[in-house]
Length: 335
Image (tube, rainbow, N blue to C red; front, side, top):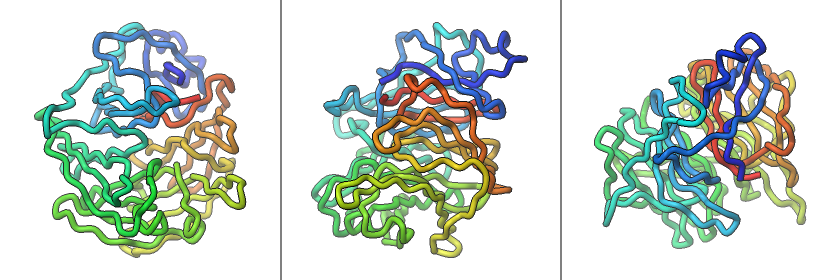
């Protein structure tokens, strides 16, 4: 794991950003790293954590400490809009609950923001008894609700590495690969507990694809799906296409893009930027090699652009990422 923060820095802003913990300018597209000192509330550095951004804050929960996948039960937030000294990043340690109202100690799970932006919904790693554990954290109350679960139809394998996205207009949660041994997408309504199975793109069907990314695009009013890998005759195959699922059409389609596109990856991060008009993809792995690159897809022109690679020794996967204005942050990860 690499306990550092990546940042962009333009020549004209080098001095202004020299004391910032987070200063990664998307428009500059040039990566570097800052080693940071922990404060009393800093989370343990992990990978395969759940994360999401609400307002000014990046929230991270759970994750693995080492290659044995030893999990840690922690929940922390970081204000990514403020300026601070590198030695004292303003992490806040949040309540992990107790008794029956306890945060999950999970790895490779997902965090979803509720429709009203008041809660974080944790979708746990699917268990072998075909259920998906669901925990809810109330942001204002700093409290957890007793966890629930939803059945996963015809699932008999571990579904770790699945990603999820929520439609902010309806609150419905979409979990690609969440049914029939990964062959279907599950639509889940957290208000009613109802669920149904939906199709997957043909490129993902019948292949048990894992470690892709899924986000909601406010620009296109659709679920975006990118990357992941599957095994074909003993060989890992990466997926390099971007697909979208608009609930209004209830069908998947391939997004035709131009420009300097990534060659496919797994265990990368993908987050929206500039009010959802762009999508940033960073890091991950491709055929067992860590990717030191950052890419931006303009969701209006559908043109990819690529930034300057970081040093290969700093490349990582399974990290938490966020954007705020011109800034992008990648925290934790494995590499």
